[in-house]
Image 1 (tube, rainbow, N blue to C red):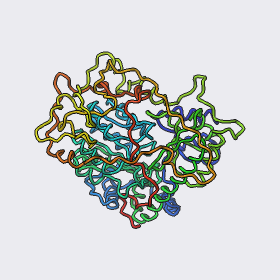
Image 2 (image 1 turned 90 degrees about the vertical axis):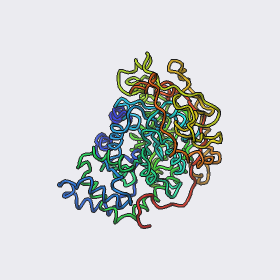
Image 3 (image 1 turned 45 degrees about the horizontal axis):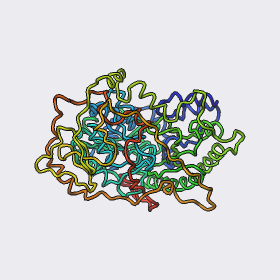
Image 4 (image 1 turned 120 degrees about the vertical axis):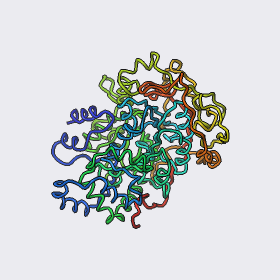
Length: 586
């Protein structure tokens, strides 16, 4: 069984095998305890499952209603205008259409993250500019540095996942709104809120209301994750009517199935149970982080998702841990070596009830510390058969695309491909570098000051940069070869005698740094003139060819890239607010 199971993981590229495949391979009995697929374990309730079982024959026999009918019912629950919403057969379908319709040449995304945001645009020949999140700062996303990176690359579409998958990193609403306004001149800004229902750091963290008022913003939401029904495949996006309508017009009339319709129409009767399920997941997250933190050498990162990102002790190989947990303990965990920007030293563990967590901790103790007959987990295999440690996804992308998009263009990228836009010289500060054609300050524009406020769009300010590496100043031929960076080694922690504190103690956190005077630099955005056109002699970077500067997949793997960002915004234990956006009774 072990060899067959291992082959399933090798054949799934950037994702894990399905539960159905693992159950078939495991033979008789139920599937493994699932710490891999991020799904709400408390919803639907047993009574709701009984209702669906009783109606199964009718549900699967007949056509569903049109997507417009199902969307209208969902919007009545969410209190959103239907013309601003498009429902898809899972958020992945919507990502696919966003890429086909709205991403013209390039997309920026912090890594590690959900694999479809890196893979989908490259499959259609777009350049993907990957911004590496730093382990040294707890994988926190510094929006000012991310904005500077976007300006240096000349990227046209920016994506933020909040919370981020796999690390659960969270950004507060005011910071995201400020970022959206600073990126008002881009083709598109996508805020992926697929896991936001599980967050409790802010009472109203969603930016759906702000997205409907802006011309270039889409918010993506999942339903399968928070409703505990991945198999149904349904999700939605929110945007201004023109953007939402453009995506909606491309979707098939019956792209939503009868199960999705049944669940959406029964939700209005179960809002209280849904809210309670989210509260229980949040409590379980704190308890699970506490139990995992007691394991010597295991680092647990702060999370606002329904999962925890953990770093294994020194010497432990994630694929070995994953396979042994499955074959010896019937526990499925997500090893993250095939996620760009991660490695096989990291696992993503889904939040589950305490009884399952105790089983998980017991299994990890046996596999990691040698309390089973097979001894402790060993370092990465040296027989040439290893397939992870951060190489699977990166090597696949680099060998096929040079991290750039369409196949066959790697030679062009290194042999005289069209250069990217020139970047204006940078002054001291924290602003964004701009293309040379837009470096002059237009009349009436107010550049961002040196105090750290969110910088203005390209057309409204002189390019500036901070102390990090200036990607835009390095041409394609001058980009240094990746130099392996030393990874901070965790200090083994003794097992405490009392109940340990929640996970946020695992990562040292400085006091949160508030955005400096956001209102003054953002006020002129609406009046700022349109971005200056790209010089004809330079032109936009052709799809699939890396622009000058920035990072490709190969460089993400071994380059530090930016100075560490402050780990701000991590929440502490708080009261449990109502679920955002559902409008259910408390």
